Length: 211
Image 1: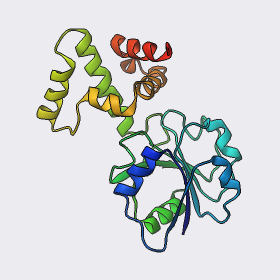
Image 2: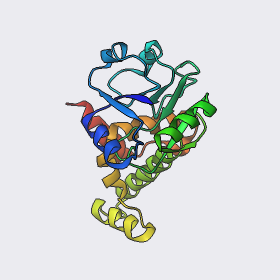
Image 3: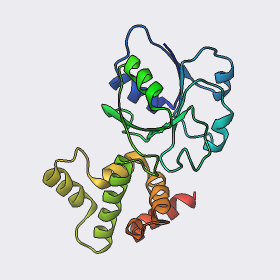
């Protein structure tokens, strides 16, 4: 199986350090998206680097294409039936099981089984599952911070000690990126007010836009 992967260096490290690939799989890491048109015969292409707008993905050739798209869905982006989407945020590619939304489950299941990578099919919704839950946890931590319940360090420690989380909510935010969390929550809040962004998280996002 020949696999093309367009990814950042960090994403590449996460995949190569955590994913077992059988000896018959040829992984080709692509540094420039234009190379996709040069390399022929890919069985599947992973577009994990989100530097390219999802709206342009539909023009990329390939039998099966898996995109990193946490906020935009396959339906909202009007992507063809050979597309699937996963969460490529930092820290998620190293998870043992990837969540995936797909309109072509039988063939995608065969591809991932050949790769030796485990997947769990989920609905084609913003945030998939884990990102939506974790963003909510981070948002609630910001509400607690804004209400002077505790400090950032103490909230992180409480979540790790009390719930056995590997990281605290603010530590997760630093890894994932405030922008990613903010944009997902804003999208989710369009249809559900329980995802309204906490003031301190909103302030963190605004600080990013100043630079």
